[in-house]
Figure (cartoon, rainbow, N blue to C red):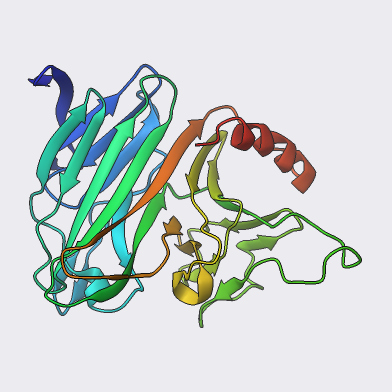
Length: 311
């Protein structure tokens, strides 16, 4: 335990990275990296299983060098493109402490893209609430069109849950509710997908290596991941009338084998040289969530957790 101007922060080694920082209260803990990233590499009830996925050995070779996802939560820039999106982030970060349980991590400007990434992480004094602020700054000499993108790798073996728009009869409303966006390799007949009247589910399957991905305009502003009896929820804003990436997606998900991500995106905007844009997520973690087998039972279990813990 080290003191920084009266603030107490625990510096630890995690996944072989010696300069990680653990933010904790009596309920949960979050671990962030400063050797690489920025990343949130762990989010869990104190001393319990990490709800985030860990892939320390994964590497993707690109024209810009080896990109390592590491696991957990990372900040990317939409829209996705190779090799730009996969610029390696394996260099040390600038670290600033902003409270007893708050930290800001700033990466060096990416030489290949001219983008500076910053991640702010603040843990509530009580409960499981975690605020994650994503900030990108254009350090180029020319404007770019971009959006912050929060990608969270979850622990394999669970199910991602996304809310459908409220059901309204054709007799009462004729206009569409929201887009559901598919990729060329998306196969909705795959058993990992389940689409009901209230929720869309995507479940991991270690034996199914071929990927699945979908995105949506999520006006409800939340997405969840259930692993056993533990439920992870992230909340994010929906901005009416804004232009979102990928045909209008502010929420996306991807899986291949045990790997699965729950993602949120900010609106696309023109960033002039030196300009910044931020995107916020608020996380919560719940234990002993029994959801039952039907959509109605799942809805009954989730609704109190979602509505009673609005950011």
